[in-house]
Image (cartoon, rainbow, N blue to C red; front, side, top):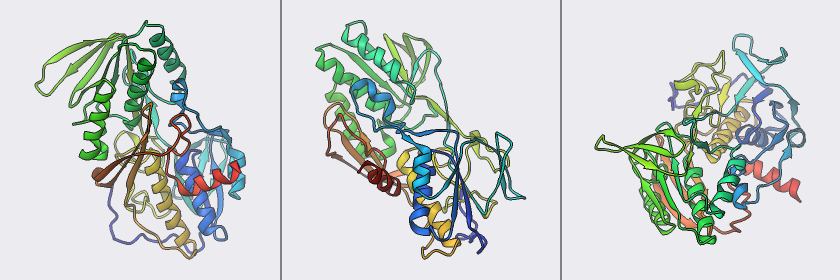
Length: 388
């Protein structure tokens, strides 16, 4: 994450009022909800998004395991609740000189401040494996059915070296182990990761607890290991010693890689991600911000996206004259891990993308109904109001 040239976030123009938010996910809606809460009188909000619905994407794949996913909600309804305008379109490029965004339809919108909450593009890394993304529910259902029928007994869960958020891979392994136990099936489950230990993003304490939990469920871990998937029943493992070994399985489940949004007209970091400073502003601009998986911050997680959105909202609100103070991004990562039994709650402070002070506890709640998987306070309040 880039650092700003000065310790203070430079304000936008005092006359700033029109805020355009590009995106329809957690980062976009948390930004809109936060601005509506702290600066409703100072800003006019417009949300650009091609989606019609807001979806809890982190839970979607696990329908196959009986996890209850919160209902999809109309994006138009959510945006309207926030007093914002919705433009059902896709952002095409940004004209920084004219302070305007160009949409795929050809329409143009002027802005005083722009928030890019576009997310990242999911890129399958191993064509012969099942990619664990929000569209994987159908394939996971077939995997569960085949385990119950006794047709699948060996499954590898693999992470590419440039991985997305790793939590779903461990959840898939633990939930698969639970299916096997419920069916009294003897399964051989293996997690393969380039991490030094499982869930190393949460620090050593969480990683050690995760290793014990996986062992308890009969899941073997091959850490610090690079892999290839040459066929659907083979994983080629390369460990610290440089030697390559083959792991023969019935199925391979793999995390995808993430690729940045490559926004034309906006500075770009490696692989198309957007650089941000401590106030989540895109360096080289005074009025363009970014939040969520599309930024170059190394940890990709809905809770991190929400924290970035809060930083963006406070910065814009302060510049617009609201009675709030802009605060820099000092992330704390929270994760709710689905295990098939009692879920675990993991938390750690992050500095430079590394975890410190990690903690693991047993989370409260029904293992089949876990709707609060992402810590997004303003959006959560909105969703609770709608649910009443």
